[in-house]
Amino acid sequence: MSCENKKNNCFKIANLDDKAKLALKKKEDNLKMELGKDFILIAYEKE
Image (tube, rainbow, N blue to C red; front, top):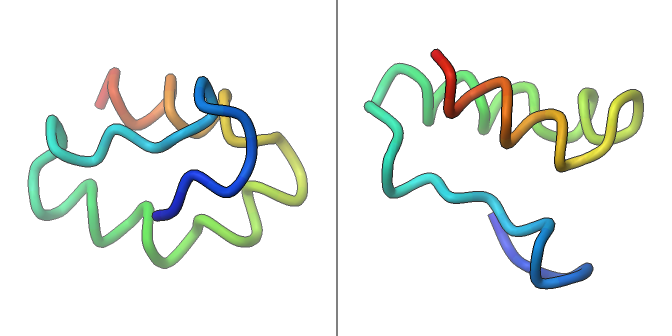
């Protein structure tokens, strides 16, 4: 959950519940490769 890329691509995990955080942690690498961090951030914030 680091911000190694641009500042705007950081994950905002503080606003997610535990279930969403766990799902994001498990899927982060695969989804990041396919869709990019911005998409993941938006998708999980809407959950």
